[in-house]
Image 1 (cartoon, rainbow, N blue to C red):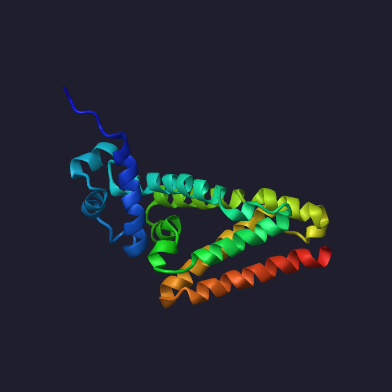
Image 2: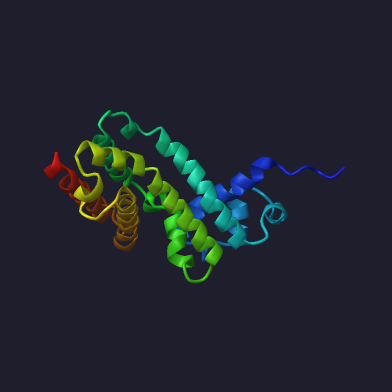
Length: 206
């Protein structure tokens, strides 16, 4: 009888890619390295994925599932005030920007920087992951807008969706600053500016 594939192997391969790609980039990460980190054979890899590109695209979706579960239980959801929840999210992201840079930077953001012009499937998967993350901020932003009288035209031409995307953009840019400088400090400072900006958007209308 043929051996059944271990259903955990696929997840192990994708999660091995998380660490390797954040440390050294997608192009520099080989299938052999992913297999070694996951503790599986190359045959097992190709049983689940036709190529490294296919794994990368699938891993972007798996990254979303893993991180969504992580953020769903984060303490910033606890305040009753939606603006406090939004600012708590920013504070939470800032607190995460410590230790090894490869440990707190974003897997899909790293791939997007490399693959946007060379791999449409990976680029699309990274955008979907970042879009999904931003969309999870929209309900709190909409509630804060309503609470502070910023619904409709009072928002001055911006929307909950556009602010959510801006938050994602600043966070991803902060990761780039950390990588370029080798220091979490500039990334943390960017999140501090983002927090002040959000306060200025809402506080005058309070």
